[in-house]
Amino acid sequence: MKSLKLNALAAIMVRILNIVFPLITGPYIARTLSKENIGYFDSANILVQLLVPLATLGVYNYGIRNISKVKNDKSHINQLFSELFYVSSIATFLMSSFYLIYINFFSNIDYTSLLYTYYILGFQLFCQFLSIEWLNEAFENYSFILYKTIIVRITMFSLTFIMIRNPDDLLAYAFVMTLAEVLNLLLSFIWIKRDVKLVKVPFSRLKKLFYILLPMLILANISILFSTLDRLFLSKAESSIYIADYVMAQNIVMIITGIITGAISVNIPRLSYYLGENNNIEYEKLLYKGAQVFLFFTVPLTMGIFILSDDIALIYGGEKFLSAGIVIAIFSLRSIMLALYNILGVHIIFIKGYEKYITIFVSIAGLLNLLLKIFLYKSSIFSAEYYIGTTFISESLVLIFYIIFIKRKKLANIKPIFHNLYKYLLISISFILISFLIDQLIVVDINLSLKYILNVSSKILLSSLTYFLSLYFIRDSIIKEILKTIKNKLKRS
Image (cartoon, rainbow, N blue to C red; front, side):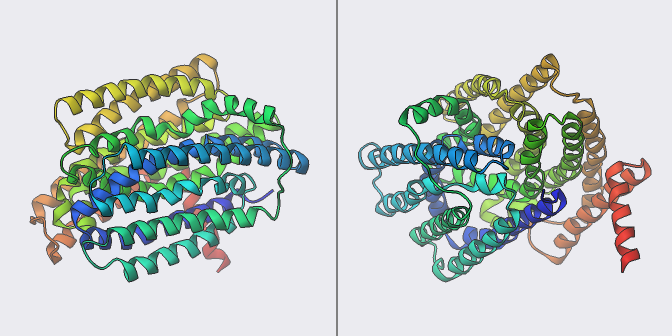
């Protein structure tokens, strides 16, 4: 069995690459393209991102969980892979057909470049039948995923600076993004086909599988009922700047926090394996350790983003995106909730086979979110912060449902998880006071000067020191393990 530490390291490297490259290309695109064209791109991209999860039909989560349980049975793997591939291909064809019909007959697009943008981005949707990354993750092929990411990111990085040079290079931007996605899908498919083969599957089995995957479809499309719904409504605003602020804020926070999510996601196949072997002791040990590590990094990171939200907006997007600062702040707070969302929903409820209840909980909260969005839309309110705010409220309801369900079904003792959350959160709140004091000592305007950089750097340095020293004095187990690892490395060298 592959090492969890090596898997986590590879996953972290993938996330780092997925952070470093966008942190370079993102500000370049934000400064090169006009804000209106960025808004146009986001408006077109939202429809594609809305349909992509539907095209894959929840296969990702279902595939990882079920393949992980039978990874030593070659014939079973081939059978399951074939079933999910055929189902995904059918769903991709249906969603692609819907997409073409919609943009050609119902979208009322009167801007030629925007129409071509829809066509180019739509190719991402047409290729979703190749989406089999779930199989690589179930097989724990994280080294391959790392090398593939390097190839895709370097290609995307190079083409971004070669092809996007003017404010009106909207189509070039769409082409680069689509090429990167298709290359990513194609490389994964070619690699995994060495280990599996397609076999015949009766249509009756595919039909049955469609019904089985319906709860997975909801689980895979949680974002449609929440943040994607935000973007859908904002794309209907008269000005494209609202959705531009929202998408930039979301991308920044997801890029920064994504590295931690990637590291913890490698636990999912192993958790499924332990449950498949009825090894509850190892399952709980990995669950609690993974949750603590997740919160150890996520909580201070998101609080740091919160206090630096305006600074991040300026550094990343320039002065024209300063209005996105408050949206970044709200997104950062939401990230803490999403960390719990991931731990409770995926690592406990989903892994133990209760996805039907996740579907119910998410549907109820999603309906509430839709009603709140309709109210904002009818009230002609299009500021991005209101939309992410209502999403925050609705997702909080899902979290409450999760907590109640886990306790009633006695799926796991979640007290240790919340104990660590409160510990890390209380220490991280001190960042607000540190930020206030530094602003009094180093008074700056919102512009990229040497004094301004000193202000931001001081906040990051002092907040980090406060966090790690506080945990050292209370003898936090993660800090102790980190120090132990460093000592061992120094002894070996």
